[in-house]
Amino acid sequence: MVGRWIGLALVLAGIVAIGELALHRNRRTRARRADLLARGVDVVGSVTAIRSVRVGTYGGHQWRAVITFELAGAPYRVEEQWWPGDGLPATVGAAIPLRVDPRDPSRVLVNPGHPPSIEADRVWRGFQFLLAALALLAFVMALP
Image (tube, rainbow, N blue to C red; front, top):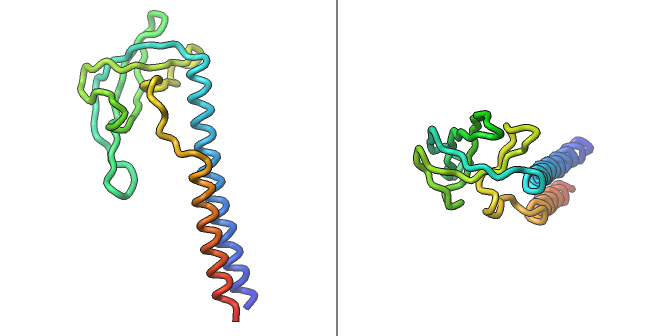
């Protein structure tokens, strides 16, 4: 009996931990984007190589491109990816708008004028509460 309770408590703790990790990741991504939008420099890069990469388990894909650009006369090369619906061309030689961190040119933001495709915290909180409710239901069903 006690083993069931401990097992269910561990499952619930794992669900909460996964949700917290997702929230932390999204907050970090948004903070990075906000910092680049505030302090970055607008640059136009050129796609030198591009390929489609599978994202997720449901067949979604993103474009992953090698982009070259110049900042203060020095050439740089980065690899970034974006969703097909972001409105960027997916061809070699295409001009791609970038926002580059002048302190660290390896930090770039592709298509800075486009809204980010980052889930809101409330989506992850809702997911977390749903899983916690399911774990609680499993806990109640496990009671004798």
